[in-house]
Image 1 (cartoon, helix red, strand yellow):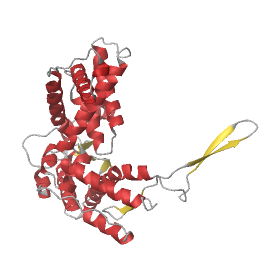
Image 2 (image 1 turned 45 degrees about the horizontal axis):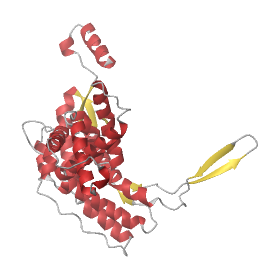
Image 3 (image 1 turned 180 degrees about the horizontal axis):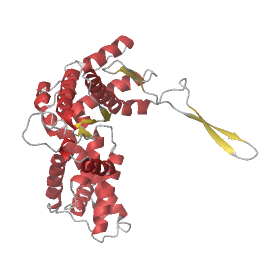
Image 4 (image 1 turned 180 degrees about the vertical axis):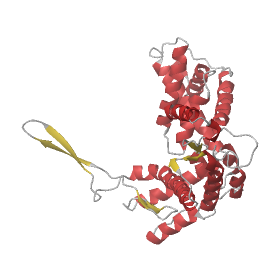
Length: 351
């Protein structure tokens, strides 16, 4: 904003705006980057298409894709007329109560679903968002829309809460079906983490760039120190404490993917530096000067393809098998038919 305005003023004041050398960086962002890495790991063509790993004339918007399918399912449920007598709830079977609950929820949220409602859940799905987290994300957006229509959200809090739980379930089901390859890889990573944590060991691995990573999650032990003036709670975070098994399992898939996207960024940075080009980045947003943007685009695609031409999951499993020879790790999920070389021609991979 402000930096751009200052640059425009400087260009005008230079007397020759057309030849003025702008110092502002141009940034290229990944398209739902976590899902891009999962799709590449599993060679998932359907998922890869949704996050622009494939060559197409128009950019794919994964949030719109998920939104459209969620809207379709909710509208279908909302339009369904149930022949269930709900005058006496005590006489309803469990199945009938569940059907009524879903139908009422669909009728409440039907017509209020847009890209913003599902976006956060789609973004965080690859980072292990739970059902509770997804429901909370969706409820914030739905309540905004209902309030805008004059509905008293406090008065109907329980009803809205249940409806957003239904909507979170539908959204996560759609995600699971659209990104089956990602789900299989995520489940495999979690299963391996569960085996390792069962040995009382933290999950550790080497990133593709050779950087060791160890998950720090342990059962912290608080101590209360009582003095004449106050009570102070101190927490022991020593590495000698027992590991937090559940956190070791749930955190590993997103942490592993973070080690992949950071490796991609580092490989891109190293090649940019080798060529004498200026480079900066924040997570999956890569920056350089306008004159070098085309070359950076080539480099970041080549670095991604080089990274995923390696047998990353096989390397990960081999390292664990050497360290834990008594554990029987499950087979790596079967990969799809995505040709990773397509990324080099995928115009909207980073945009």
